[in-house]
Length: 402
Image (cartoon, rainbow, N blue to C red):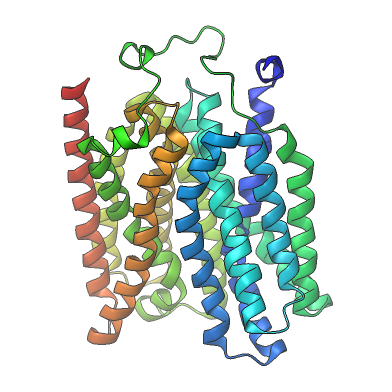
């Protein structure tokens, strides 16, 4: 117990960021998928099913990760999750058939991210009660930036080696980072607080609500619905940015590739900046403001016809999407207390998992039926306005209950 008190919280945050960076490698999947299908002679749609399976597994195992965090602590959970993540990618390099691909990448790596991502963010927040938004923004921000490094690394490896060797090397890279950093990660001593920090009066007397108590609180459902609606626009753009840009702004393949980097930087900037600003102006206020901006951006996006205008719209989307994600773990901790935030936030985060299905698929359906993405942008704008309204209701209820 004494060792926990002696840990440097900034070093803990750095180690958590190293691990969430690895989990962000999922965003570089597109660099591998086409080469994998071609090299193994597999149908591309069946190869991409591994990615969908991973996302579903991450969403489902996020709840399990919250439970395991409460039972076993951050250190053991992050060590296991990091090793599983590296092994999942490494073993994919030995897949001889589609079933092996689904098990190694879809299930093993998916479980690893579910076990490690949310618990890592929650642990970061627990070390920074005075800077919750900043800590959350850093932990989720480097995850979003991961594709800027992992995708070029993958492309370089694919020019030198076959795709299976590339998977093995990237898996080894993830495994090395995890083993080097996860051993230092742990949660703070119960009741610990930074020197000079005074907890707000409304939370100082309470250690927090259990998940059962949280589910009896109407604020939980308001925040869950807020996160679901708030994530639709960002996930829609992440899933279709290249195709949308080619249709609405006539961008080239090279410009489409550039968008990946632009969105990653905007996403990181939004996560860090808005997460930090939420420490100053309040979580609810940031989410409400960001969602209103997102709604305007979606309406604007439905009318753009040039590459510069499309880039502006994409940057705003990335900032809004990243900022919302950076704020929510801290918002959950503020609302229901820090002690059980591991599982509480994991439950609320299932709203994001549903949005990851709703956003891209609604965009595809509207494009197929109407021949244009314009209707999808209006749908996303409505979702963003709804998110702002739900968050406003949560803020009002929060004031009454406190």
